[in-house]
Length: 169
Image 1 (spheres, rainbow, N blue to C red):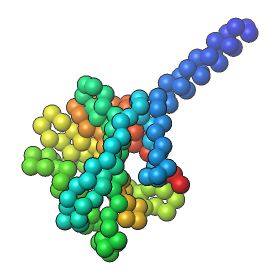
Image 2 (cartoon, rainbow, N blue to C red):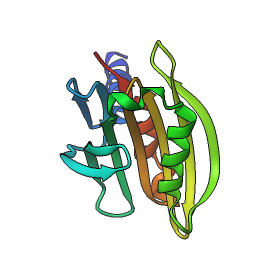
Image 3 (cartoon, helix red, strand yellow):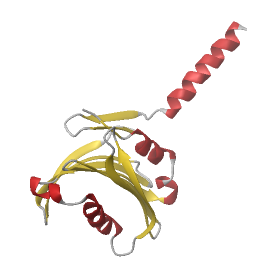
């Protein structure tokens, strides 16, 4: 009886551990935490845009097969605080969609206790799928993305990415 109870306890712990991401990446500097299947690579890149030169910070996990998971964040200049979130989202969607992408899903979302505005999109382009959630938190924009095959973008790792992304202080 005792060994049966111990086996059930060990099994329950193993199942609970299976449901947790293998790596939790927290960036206090950039204000978020996210669960990933393994240790990500981080980098930053300066981009010249209509808003001026912006620094894009990226945390990326490449599965090596059919899926890339990433979180990017960018701070816009103070001059853009008057731009409506809808305009920011519209421009971002156009860039992500590219020439051959079709929006298969679009949904309003929010994040955090302050309910910062966001959008969730599913973009299909040939055999590739882009699932993305975008949030505007003050002047900072977050993009949480799963890009790959339909199976990869709809799989467990992508679901964990979206389920575990949260703002931190």
